[in-house]
Image 1 (spheres, rainbow, N blue to C red):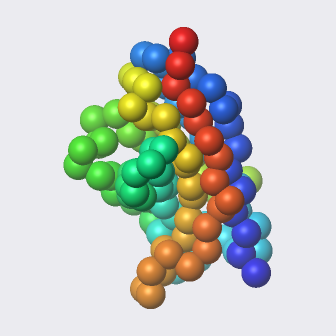
Image 2: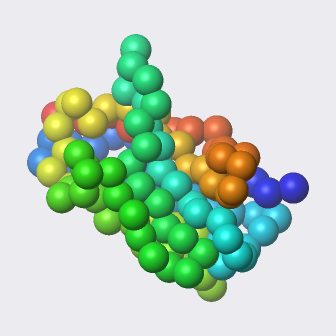
Image 3: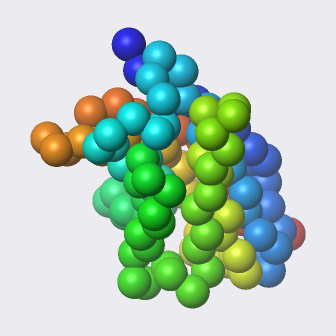
Length: 118
C-alpha cells in the first residue's frame, strides 16, 4: 500500500518561498512509470494541478505557475519537494501530493493547509 505524507510550514509570509515535502512509503518514486504530483485547492475553489516529477526525474509544471514553481526529489529518502516562490495570500490552499499512473491519480496524501499571511 502506497502512502504519501505532506509536511512543511503551515504559515508563510507574503513574498517568501513556500516549501513542502512529500514522503512516500510502500513504493519507490523511481518506479516506472509513475509521476509524483503536487495539487492544491484554495478555500472554496477547485483542485489545481501544479506540477509533477516523473520516475525518471523529469519535471512538468502548470503554465500558470511555471515561473514560480520548482519540484525536486531526494531518492535516498524517497521524498519529493515543492517550492513556490513569491507567494501571496492567493496561494493560501490545502496542498496535496499524489501519485499518477496510466489510470490517473491513485494515491493521495491527506493534504496540508498552508496560509500566506503576514
